[in-house]
Image 1: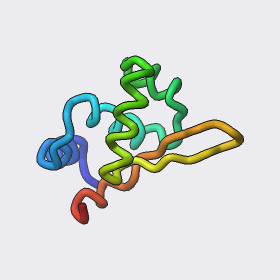
Image 2 (image 1 turned 180 degrees about the horizontal axis):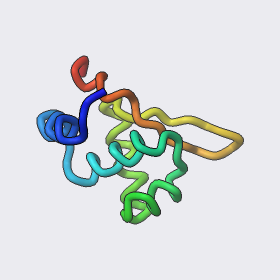
Image 3 (image 1 turned 90 degrees about the horizontal axis):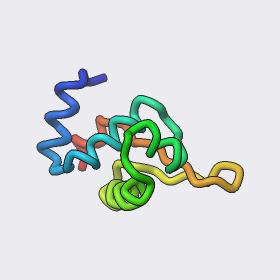
Image 4 (image 1 turned 60 degrees about the vertical axis):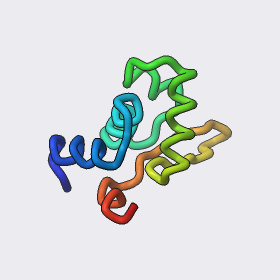
Length: 84
């Protein structure tokens, strides 16, 4: 597993903005989160969370999961950055 500074550098090289990187790293640390939980953890508003999750999903860094009728998100492995 990569250390935090290596991962942050890789995210910057990949072209993520600050909010995208914050959401991705929060999901890496916490696994599955609803958008509301993610907003609380990341200190970003919920509207921003939905937009950022969609952006991250489009580039393949976040998976959307339907869990008991609730939408949750999970970050894909940071090793996937090398592939993308």
